[in-house]
Amino acid sequence: LRLVAVLRAILEGEKAAVLKRDRHLPLSFHRRQEELKFGLGLQRLQHRIREIQALWERASTQRDSAGGERRKEGPWAAHGQGGTRAADPLELPALVLEAVKELEVAKQQVLKRIQIWKRQQQLAGNGAAFEENLAPLQKRCEALAEVHLQLQQQVLAAGAELGAELLPRLLERLAEVLCSLVKR
Image (cartoon, rainbow, N blue to C red; front, side, top):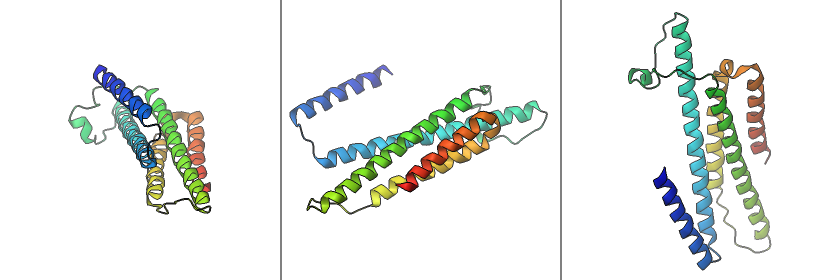
């Protein structure tokens, strides 16, 4: 972690030097930076979803084996991953809440990009250059919708572990994310 902190400090210093030297970076630089941030956030969100699934499977397996039932365990148990550690009942709701927060952040990034595209389209009416290619924006929306669906499936699958109070709130937040994307 120290190495990461040192590298981050070096990169921040380099970034500050470049910004100081070249006050105005090209638009393509900012666009690429935004694409990388969105991609990283989406990968982090997909990782959270896989963590939720693994934790839920581990909790289900432990619950089934404690109840006397034998359930076929997944390949992660055969390798000793997760089978020895007991699943904390508070860990799953915390992971799901964190994933929903990250989904909302990704949604905000997509909505910001849509607003930028709309503004560029307005400026194009006044003669400004305008890139009409909607493929990157569509790819973002599709990727976010796919992750949203995966997260919603995990929330529904882990509904009993999340509790009667948290489940409706999470489903409402997920519905709100989807509605705000569809409306804009």
